[in-house]
Image (cartoon, rainbow, N blue to C red):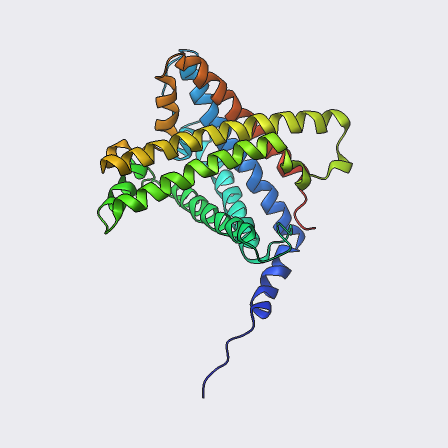
Length: 282
């Protein structure tokens, strides 16, 4: 006898109940704070390079590696890992339930947002696994992961097209972030009635600066991916750390890198503000 497939609403209900639990909201808030801390480390290391203080630019994985070697680093990284897991769970809820009502219709924009949430959940799941490996001493370095997956894509049929599309998407995401920064639509997620006028003003400014800086980095990554596709050369692909390093090598590179580094630090503060004031369910 054929078993009937449960309705989507029945599948969503356990997730909905979990998402409405107070502990889940606390875990999600910890997730935004952990994300902010990771970007603070990325921005701080980039700022040191811009100021000529040594070191090198890095990505989020490099930030985790930097955290674990500090005093009490494994304990701190464990807290960050738990937070990242909370952030992943929140992204999954956004993908499945759309609790913030990002769109009232099943239109292309809403579908694209949900796909973006799903990819974000996958990316941060990888980051949480990296943190676990660093804590347990079972590895954690990812080498040139951007170049690795670019090489794998290029080896597939229509590989150049696939990498080119990935680059175009990254570039599009970068422009979308810059537009979001300009419009400051992120404020609609905040509990503005709980914020003072000064907090509203600074949360807007820091959010705009931080999101715009992130958009610039995504745009640079997209350009390098499209260049890798055009030349069919995976070594042309750059991740976050390499994109920041490339920015620093341009004319007035230190100034450009310094501004973007400060922007990433502003983004980290923006994430902490989200951890405090974000409204999770409308």
